[in-house]
Amino acid sequence: MNQALKKIETTLWNNEDELEVLTFDIAGETFAIEAVAVREILDLLPETLVPGARSFVGSVLNFRGRVIPLADIRLAFGMEATTTTKDSRIIVIELELDSEAVLIGVRTDKVNEVTTLTKKASEPPPSVGMRWRADYIDCLVKRGTDFIIVPNMKAIFSS
Image (cartoon, rainbow, N blue to C red):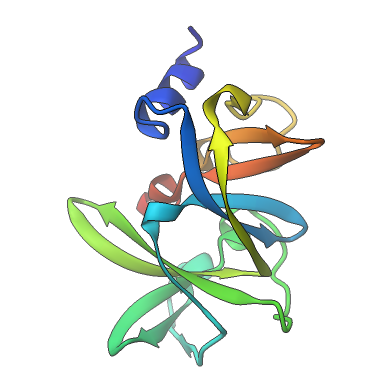
């Protein structure tokens, strides 16, 4: 079995054939985050810029009395920053980083739906022709004629 596919099966699917995800759009691409990691979907909130922070996590926001980082993962993927629209939302996710549960806001262009992806439709990212870092992507899942990108949030925020 391909090492990349084996890694996906052991870390993402946890021996399950299906994965429940929240899908969202960024720069015309559809992404998905495991639904269990999603804590809340918010309308845009006031942001406070953080001087000297990494570009894709350049601000913080007040989430229920807690200060949490706000990430624009399009910048981590090397995409252009864009202005927000009436459909823009913030997805608050919880990740375990360095054995600690961390809340992070992720800016999106649009939140779509909660859906189920199947393991048999998933593939590791190709090693050639990708415009993004392969280690930032867990897998691509074919749905109809389109692909849904499942980012590796731990890799993005650990780097």
